[in-house]
View 1: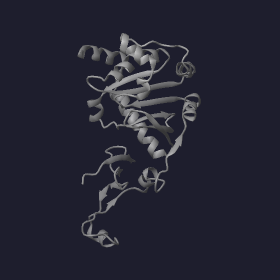
View 2 (view 1 turned 60 degrees about the vertical axis):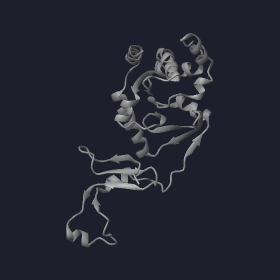
View 3 (view 1 turned 180 degrees about the vertical axis):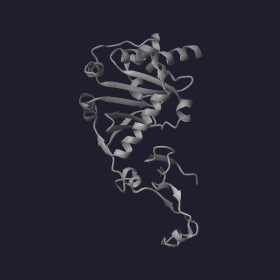
View 4 (view 1 turned 180 degrees about the horizontal axis):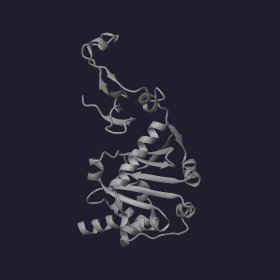
Amino acid sequence: MVRQLRFIGTDSKIDGCPALHTDEGTGDIIVQGTPVTDPEDLAQLQHLGADEAAVAVPRELLVNWGPKERERVPELVDRATFRRLFETFKHTAWRLETRRGYASDRQDPDFQAFLATGSSPCDPGEPWFLTIKTQTDAGKRVGRVRVADRPPTTEQLFLLDYARHNAAFGEDIRYVWREGADEVGLPAEDFWIFDSRLVALLHFDNEDNLIGIELITEPAEVVRYAMVRDAAMHHAIPLDRFAEQVATDE
C-alpha cells in the first residue's frame, strides 16, 4: 500500500531533516531523522522489532510540530461568523483557490451575463467590494492565488474577467497553472488564512457547493498553510500577465 504522506514541519534551518509527516489515510506520524545504528545504543532500546528502525530527533521537533490532540475535532462556523473575519483581521487576508468551478459562481447573474456577452458587470455597492475597499484603504492586504487549468474552464474564464473588478477595490489576484501547482506540491484545498494565525478551510461537495467552513488555529497546522501560501505566491504570476498568456493560448 502506498501511503499518502503530507509534510507537517521541521525545525531544520538547512536541509529539512529531521522532519515530521502524517499519513492522510491512517493518521500515522512518520518521523524522519538520523538513524540510530550503534549496536550498544540499539541494545538499550526496549521492544525494538527485527523489522523496525530507530531515529533520533530533537525534542523541539515533537514539541513544535507534533499533534496536540489525539484526534482533531473540526471547529465549524456559519457563514455570518466567516464573513466577520474579513471585518476583524488586523493585517492580511489571503486565499488559495484550486477548484475548476464554484456552484455559487454558476448561480450568479453576473456569470450568465458573462456567458451572453463575454464580459461581467460590476456593482460597486456590493458588500464584498465595500468591505475590501475599507480594509485595503486602511493599509491591510487582501490577496489570493488561483490555480487554473490549461485551457481554463468556463468558470475560470469568468473569474479571470471578474478579477479586474476585485483588483479595482484593492485585491492582489495572481495565478498559477495547475501543472505548475502540482509540480511544487500545492494541495487541492481551498482556504483563507488571516494574519498568519487562523485558517478558514473551505469544504465543498462534488457539485462545487460550499458545505462547511472549518476554523484551524493549531500553530503547526497554521504554519503549514502559511508555507503553502508562500510557495503559491512565489510561483504565481500577476493577473495581467496571466490574462495575456490565456489570450495567447487562444
